[in-house]
Length: 321
Image (cartoon, rainbow, N blue to C red; front, side):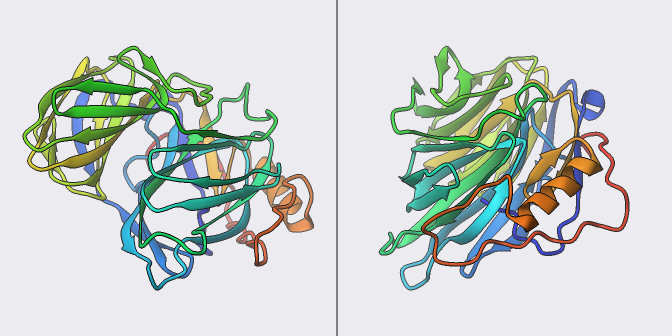
């Protein structure tokens, strides 16, 4: 998924200086951002107060939207570098195309994982015809320096491991949890899990004390470590936890995101993650000139133009503003 904001501003993130080394309960409110003709997303990361959670650098939650009489998601070809995109659906379908030749329909609880590496372009659209409702999340994972120039590729995983407990089923999207590991390729110690709770569930999910965590609410009424988290909001939890209490007032869906705090300082501008202003400037030239990021074939429409760079220098800093 793309950042379609035509007034894009750089986000500076990464580095351990602002990692909260103890358990906290920091509720993050979303910023509403239009995505195409008929989709609006709730952006949780980057946030005014929190830039990253482990290597997770971007989180959008959308839906559930009734798109029966709408085109649904329509994101034209656009570039990425230095990151992985994670597509995760609860309802609906998304048709993915990219410049490596991938063409894949992603359905609920299937992992669409694109590693941009040194550069890739892709488009996302609701198929025609499509299901009535669209509900999901789109996330980015920052690639560490040793892997950010890797070859681009796309993975689609249908069979994902599930961790179960009374009233809980946690599907492993990326990384590891309670002895289970996702087949998706990960480049840092990380976890992403889709947590389904049944009404009345009162459970404790095992965590890694060296990881920092956040929980995104997708649906229903749930309390995370005693804090009610409404759909479309996210609770940042800091580090130092060995378990996480979860209680469901109704059937509920959550996403657990975590990982080792990301050491490197980053610059995120539009759909690129780099380390220096020169890298971002070069990426913009390459996209504008039609080189490096390849061509997405089969999408009916023009690629997205890159926004103008800001007049001030881009400098990598820490994890919060």
